Image (tube, rainbow over all chains, first blue to last red; front, side, top):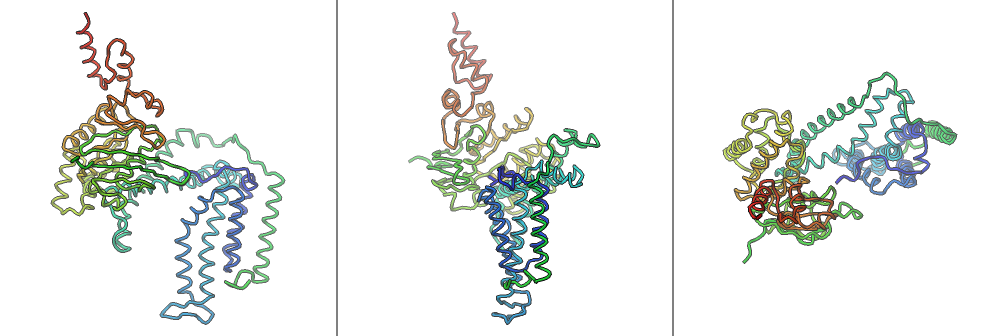
Amino acid sequence: MSLMYDLYQPGRSPLHRADPRVKLLGVVCASAALLTIQNLWLILLALAGVHGLLLGAGVRRERILWIWRVTLPTVLLIAILWALLNPTPEEPWLAWWLIRLSAYNLAQGLAIGLRIAALAFVVFCWLFTTEQSDLVLGLVSLGLPYTWGLVLAMALRYLPTLGSAFRTISEAQQARALDLTRGGPVRRAKAYIPITVAMLIASLRTTQHVSYALESRALGALPHRTYLRQLHFRPRDWAYTIGILLATGVFFWARLALGLGTHPLAL
Amino acid sequence: MTAQPAIAVRDLIYRYDPELPALEGVDLEIENNAYLGVIGQNGSGKTTLVKHFNGLLKPTEGRVQVFGMDTRQASVGQMAHSVGYVFQNPDHQIFCATTREEIAFGPRNLGMNDAEVQERVEDALDAFELGPYADVPPAVLGYGLRRKVSIAAVYAMRPQILILDEPTAGLDRRSADELMRRVDAMHAEGHTIVLVSHDMQLVATHCREIVVMDEGRILAQGPPEAVFQEHEALARASLAPPPVTALAQRLGDLGMPGDVLTIEAFCRALGRLREARP
């Protein structure tokens, strides 16, 4: 059984009540800032902050652990490869063939790896606290055509469903004696072909059925849509927007003028 | 000495997460060559239970043994030698370019040589009347045929135990009857069949024994004639006997036996009643 079938987790936290456009602005600004940071301590601080936001919004620990489970292999791979192979300006602790290991590139590797997790957490912060309909409305009000917004929202909605389908297909093929645990990496990768192809066929079939269902319910029948639900940009949303823009401005000034976050260890 | 059961389940507890117990203390023995139906409403634990039979799920507590082997000690691939599992949705299984290759996939995984694989494929194509579609991509076939392919693909592995999850769901009457005739034939050949279904008539017509599940527990177990008279257990599981059985039970005051499962049996009982009337 899948841990979750819908990304949105209902709640009444300030994050839940904020306008989806404000949250999108927050995601864009936080992502832009994170992409410029190479400092391990700042990345850890950002991760702690976003965990605080998620827990404060009442997002269940299982969901937070799920993001870690999904991102951790990539985080570790990047951290290890970066730490071992990237040139270091410092005297290395270990130098062998292409490998140069030092505190500098170890911290840098960890920072760059954890940055992937931090970016994922920022995006999931938005998705866990925003209803699918609000998400689409937010994007549409920013100028995105409705069908594009719907496609994006549905793609996000179907991520957990596809994850669940992948597990079921994997079980179905293993029940036919497909062994995913034996042999080296190439053999194991080959063993996933039956699962991947079945997954592709099942996804295409689902896509076709969903598109038929949408058209049958008159999607695109009229040039202009009316909306039962309207978004309202309230005073608190203006306050959040100003806060986000100010914080982002201050960060980039410190980044450019003071070199904040450029060194992997020193602040 | 009693014969070893095909499947022995002892004190089985399974939790998907600590707050969500799916099975709570299930005890069950399935004899070799049994034809067992597992019924219950959605979320009652039917599929969770049968997924333990081929090791897809491992017990949180308790034990599941298949022909004496503890399922925790074997991988799903190893269990596939003796237990075949046909999933509800054929699209979760189909991936090959032709039906022939699809059917050959399982036997190849079991390590058979080309001649054996060929023999198994031809036999399965014959048994399920899939010969005309042997070289067609199975993904483009209609739902009924895809369902047949998915069952033929497991049949070709010749597992001693065959688990079918909702085998007739979405099939028209003719296709469902054809499919069940083939499953009955497999039972007659000596296979143990475990059928998970919401279709009471299907289970009543084909199974020799029924297990009723509710909230992760077995509420009733026995031959269908007996289980469909356990009204309290059926009501608790939000189930009802097949219509013909329910009608026979309503006519109990007139002497109609309550263990009638099919229309044919109903007509026979009615004939006997008419003959017995003065």
